[in-house]
Image (tube, rainbow, N blue to C red):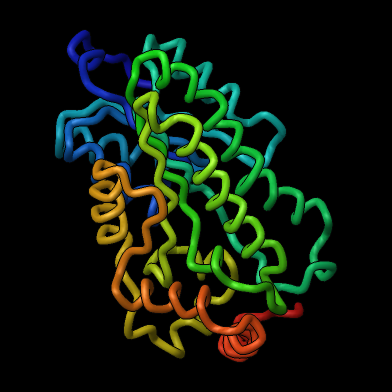
Length: 274
């Protein structure tokens, strides 16, 4: 981790998980442009180092590079300890790290499904639990939890745990808002739709996605920019993009049987059995 100059202690610090690519890197760049220092967390140290250099050159901000596997038990603890050891505290938390498992539930080992839950659910809650006391004592702070349009969706074949995990993130964010808004903490659950990132490649469905381009996909930079603005405005549940807002409304208002059938038909090509 780089040494921090004395002046950096005056800048707010944004902790971004899954910062090596996609939405995480976009949030890091957006907060750096706003004058925040960064704590960059992901498994790929080389990418984090490259991003830290980019942000310093572009904005003069300092970054703490903290490689970590967030699928491990209590993975948030050494990350927060590393930040404290540098004499810093977290002003903004972006819980972004995640991945997808497009196969049927028992087609992959339970260990992989457990890693999914640890990364997308348990560690998300762990980071929030770790940073909220300090934010509350200072009377300010921001938490952005990356949910998904899938939070409004019924479960269908493939990605068995994904809708449930994102629904928990959404409801968890609502609970945190109810408990800590009056203490100065702004919590936002952002529910993006298709976003142009490495998610499809990592999940093994990028080739399928490329064969059927999405007219209404958004860039990671667009999602990060409007989400930060929504958080600063105190928005709790935020769906970026008019097309996604319409989709979320339909999923919540139409009969669940109809929604489930439509989503099952649309997602069938992304369900991998091998």
